[in-house]
Each structure stands twice: as structure tokens, then as C-alpha cells.
Length: 193
Image 1 (cartoon, one colour):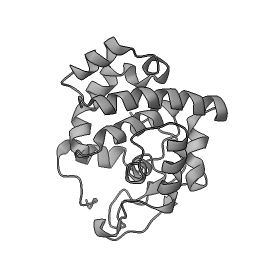
Image 2 (cartoon, rainbow, N blue to C red):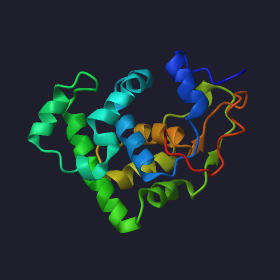
Image 3 (tube, rainbow, N blue to C red):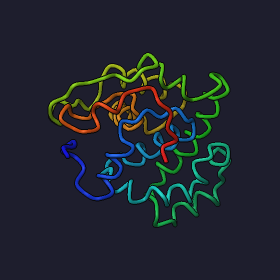
């Protein structure tokens, strides 16, 4: 079975084969990926995948309403939690992003239509032959990053936004020889679980 060249570990392979590039429309799932992609900045995605269940536990299963209310005591507890990335700026950004997420939900009803507008509501079907052809950012990720920042989100640079778009199926960047290329890209629902 041929797959993209980037998955190396069993965890990476399982994530690639089951989740990466599958369209996500569930707000909690979208919020989870937005937080995890920001946490990954400067680290490998494998590191974040290993800590994913710990993040779910530590962050109340990515319940934005709870996270938005975290106080100094909770921040200290998170900074002491070896199961997640213990970076003060990233933890503060998680809380701020939860607050910004709630504001977007209030304005748009859901996070889903707001985020998916950057790709016109449908996955962009790329036909990359190798990883070398995949860009780090695109005009769509630039636009998403700019708007997210304007709304108060942190750790949402264009490169992070593009990785997020790949993860949640807004773009299909499975290489054409990968067995997941054809199945990915339809506007189906996923809860990122």
C-alpha cells in the first residue's frame, strides 16, 4: 500500500491513514486542531500526536467555554503538566484562542462556516506528486492567518494555518500515489476522533 512519504512512526501512520486530510466540520474538532497546530510550532507533529490524549485530558477535551475561563491557578497546573508542551506563551494563546473562538461562534453561529470560507466551502483538490511540491503556505492560508490574527487568535501564522488546513481536509495534500488521495477531499463530517 502506497502512502505519503512523511509518516514514519506507527502513530504517524495511523494518523495519516485515518485522519489527515479528512474534512472536519465539527467545531470542537476544528478547535482541537487549531490548538494542536499552534502547540506544534517549533516542534514535530509526532511530538504533538504523542501528547494528544494528554492535551484532551488537560484541556477539558478542548471545551472552549471551560478553557476561556482558565485562571492563573489552572495556568500553573498546565505549566507543571509534563504530558503537554509546557510553554507559557502557548498556554496563554490557548486561553486567548478559546475566547476568540467563542466570539467567532457568536458572530457566525459556528466556527465551521467561518473557517471553511477561506477555501470556498469545499476542499481544494491538489495533485502533488511529491512532498517537495507541497508549499508551506498559500494565499488561502495567508488570508486565514490575517483574519484570525485580526480576531485575536495567537500562534496562527500562515504556515500554521496551512498545516491546519491540511489536517482538517480543507486542502487535500496527499500525494497522488497515496492510497488516501482519492478518498480524501469530499465534504464529509468528522469529529477528529
